[in-house]
Length: 348
Image (cartoon, rainbow, N blue to C red; front, top):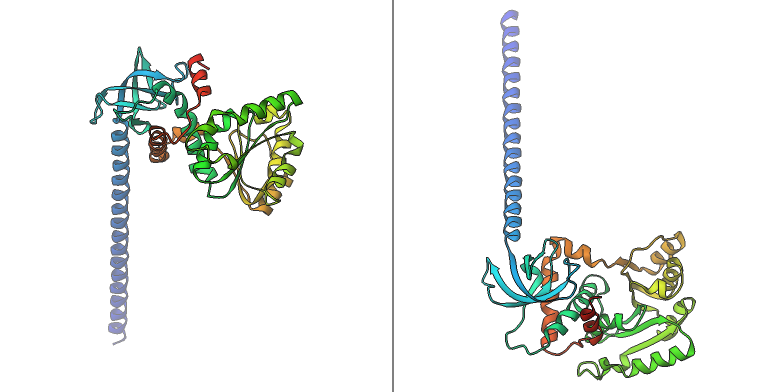
């Protein structure tokens, strides 16, 4: 009897082990199946992405050039011309835009120009195309800077630190179109040059433009030494500080100071929860500057147009900026600088 009981116990255990193994194998098979399905999904996504990239790469234009702003610098130069070869329905259209990273000039034709960096110029447009091309990149650059980093709001006070007034014009225009205040800071000069600057500024054709002649009171030009920058910003903003501060390339050199000194002045003049944007790289940041940024809740940004145009993640925004800029130009709601045209004609 004992032998039968023992035998039954052993058989039961064997069946239990067999069932457990079958269950484990079943779970493992299910896991492997799920992993296989996940892998297939991932491969499908990669395949779709590669197809999208190939499709995007195929969307290039060949354009017979009419104007180009910087013939020696093919990448990111403004241009205009007629489309002579396209996979889309773009043939014979007159387009304007910024050259892409893979664009090449072959004789008088742009090759491998991406569609997302062009916009069609209306056929009935009577504006000077050379004037448009010379102003397109500065205006589009300023709009992209506002889209990504400045994010100007109505009634804010925007401070621009620059080497001269002319270089701020593209930014000033978009700021004024948002009904914000703008204060431009340039380096202080001797009395004679100061008087000439003020006289030239008040008579600048920008303030005679239909869009901006009623906004003269929203623009202030200040000339200071770098050490006076923060105190003057606080003075003109009633101690609130700037909502946005933009430091343009060349400002450090013309203010005749070290970058770290100008950066500290900018931070001291910045308001709480403001945005500080540099269009050049910073050499260093001290712990006290980091503390100031944290205590004031400042967002520190770096505007690099080349980086934006090199990535495919901002394709739609770049195209929108081009279309928006061209729309305003065609509607005569933006000022086109003759200064930019003279630089364009001189090849600088």
